[in-house]
Amino acid sequence: MDMSKIFDKTQTILQRKDLKTIGGLFGLYVASKLALKTLSALWYILKPRRDLLRRYGNNTWAVVTGATDGIGKQYSKELASLGFNVVLVSRSEKKLEAVKSELEKEFPNVQFRILAADFSKSLENGFFQHIEKELKELDVSILINNVGIMDAFFWESPVNYTKNVLAVNQMSCVMMTKLLVEHFKTRKHRSLIVNVSADIGVVAVATATLLGSTKRFVDFFSRSLSEEYKDRIDIISHICGPVMTPSAAEVVGESSGISLKSCVHGVLAQAGYETRAGGHWQHQIHFKFLSSWLGKRIMVPVLDNYLQDVLRKHPLS
Image (cartoon, rainbow, N blue to C red):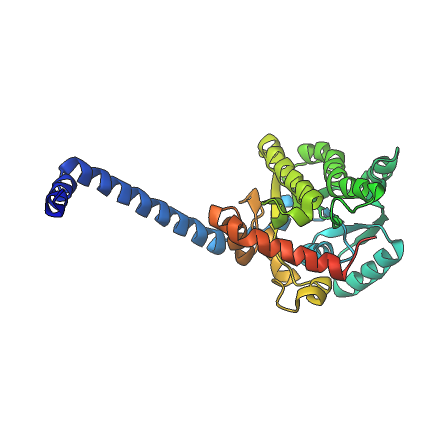
């Protein structure tokens, strides 16, 4: 067939009004979607930070699990700086005493209590009754479910270690929430629960079979819980991205992520607004990109290599 005839027919089709209308509507749709995403991103960054002490109650307590290191310790610092009293929960009583002493010097007007609890024993009878007894007299307004442990290669992990991962990463989150949710429902003020998930729970990575699955559970648990209690409790699923911790610096260097302060400050800035957030804007972009088709294709190999480096340099026992 003559190519000039094909060209003429194609031009005729494209000049039809109905196709022009469809093309125009599609262009409008794409432009509108892009504009909404841009406005949403700007709102995420620029919206006013809420007064958390007024929202959740003055002279109240925040409970932070995994409070002696990393993100948990930074949550404790950030909440103390806002005026909340803090219950530090972790496995080692010696480390708890040291962190308590450090924070009391930094925040002399804030009360701190310690509660030693090894969440690998979450399945033992009476474990959570002990925690409930310790918290009963306090007006707890905030719960930070942060405690968690790394997973080794699934096929190499001893059975007992696998049980510990499930107990620490899942059972602790569910049962600490269970202990406090009825109290939260009866309070005059709203309450806040932050469940620390991770980017590794957004995508499937071979190196983190169990870890990613438990973080995925924490994310879905948080979102479902938020639907149930949104009238009384602010619930955030914290999709945590790379954070600059001492252990991470040993593996991939100082540029391994944002600072702990930026990470936690960014999450608490979303309290009362978001139910699922990366927190800091860099983590939010990371989270959104990772959720996309292109992001999964690019980032899964990166995460896999990173975790292999971690496990190679810090083998789990």
